Picture 1: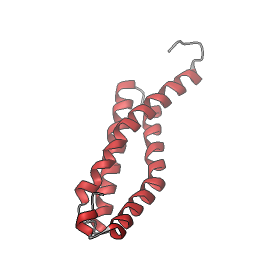
Picture 2: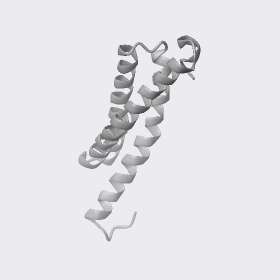
Picture 3: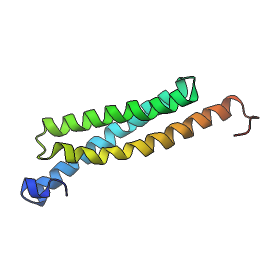
Picture 4: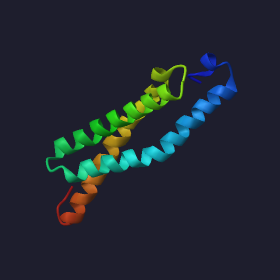
Length: 111
């Protein structure tokens, strides 16, 4: 919908949407695994959770914006804005994985 008026119809905007969907499918898993890695491997909890949100978000936004610019998307910035949905996803995923690993290390400790 973002590129509908700029591309001149449904077919070109659907092509942009399919590119975005394919990119999200393949690289979304890599980005979330990176989030998980940061949440687990960094010792201080606050720093780990902040890094698990900020770093993958910046990587995802940069890659998405770059892809849209390289592929000639008419509105690359507007097309990148939906990628911000990764912020709550990484926050929840990082917290969940951090908590899961803590329980595996010390199963008797209460949450």
